[in-house]
Image (cartoon, rainbow, N blue to C red; front, top):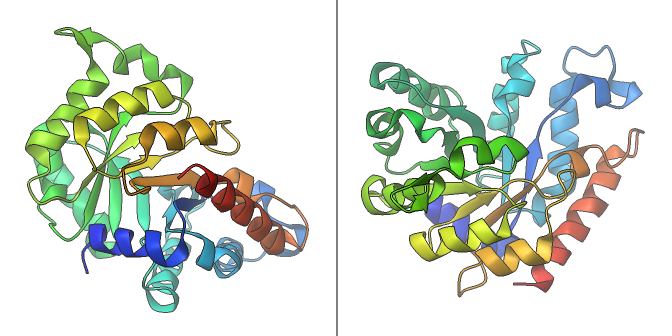
Length: 270
């Protein structure tokens, strides 16, 4: 099953547009895991087991693993998701983007080494930096468009030929890069007005939406702006609000409560 089909199935089976980001920060893990060589893996497993029926995806952020020399624990997490919950899409948040020959290696990293269902990429270097990813026709390629951070406006809002740069990105992806139907866009939850403009350009293309929870995105506004006519079309990510709902040994149960509340709030506006 290709990524897009898997995502559509997950939206239905979980009745959820919620994605949980796996951003394991060792300084925030429960005391009971401190000092364990497999602490990140054990934390991830507990979060996944507690929330798997509430989500349409998981999104491990590669920097949280690489900074700790914990790529082995990322591999273990990816393998666990594939075997225990194979119906749930897994997005590797890597934001790769480089010249063609290097992009080939980044694509192999995401899709061969980690066997991710999808990966985030940066479009700044243009078509030849994206093609090594999109040629994996069964995989998802999630392209930065209008990001959730405050500095996004520095470049993404610049007006070119009468419209902002992020809309040029949206148009390029929808009309040129999506030949295999496997592209998505990243549009931050903190910018519902821009999200609506992107939706008008890309039709039913799915959007990965960071910025809910700790970053303060307005759930009603973003769902109203970004949902498709079917009430789907969004992969709404929450990381810190779910992962660190408790710093105690009840962290997994607390994560489940927040994930369930987030899913239910999103569903109110679908």
